[in-house]
Image 1: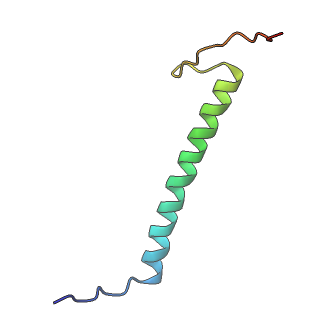
Image 2 (image 1 turned 45 degrees about the vertical axis):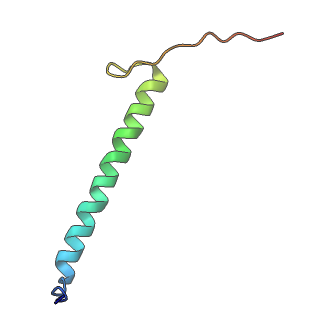
Image 3 (image 1 turned 90 degrees about the vertical axis):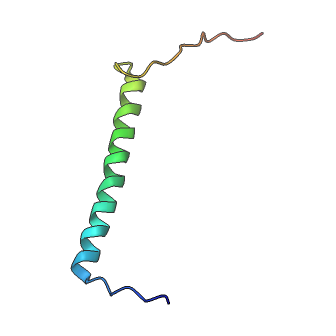
Length: 57
């Protein structure tokens, strides 16, 4: 028979929530750093194929 779990304390809930938020913050920071390095052309680990900008007339 299914038994309900014990209630999680407020402090544990807050700790778990902060860890979850911190993971998202780190991922966003890494993504922003990668985008910044790609836009400036200083990326050493990510290769972008350059396309020739030609106007079709």
